Image 1 (cartoon, rainbow, N blue to C red):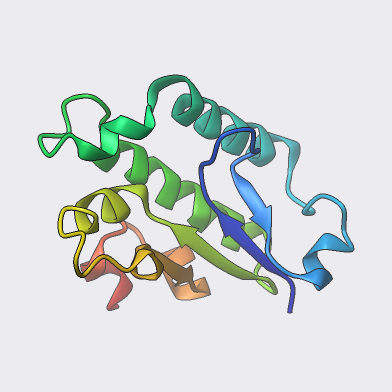
Image 2 (image 1 turned 120 degrees about the horizontal axis):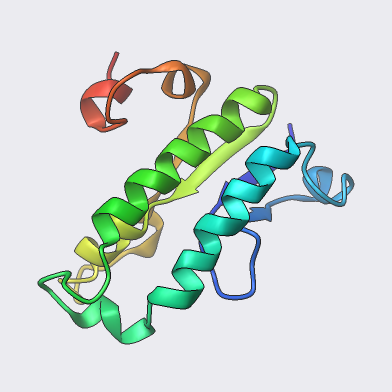
Length: 132
């Protein structure tokens, strides 16, 4: 099963093709509209998020929570368009929060899989929605 990772990063399109099977496609078979939304979301990250913003415990420099909520909705939309793919989401808000404790920081905890059930859930997309 091809794997795509929804993640904002500098010089990115808002996703990474995460394995050889996915890379054989060249570009994921997403609608033009969704690919554009991902690119726009990633551009927000590039334009507004400075690496030092992760050190701001108040979140006043960059709104990680709102940014991550939009990213989660995009990841859910990707899963709806690619139900046969493994879709994972790198949650910037979770990463920002977890990095508060550097001695126990494990970046892998900020990434999770979006299932078909998650993609079809309604609401805010939080843990309560994922438990349905």
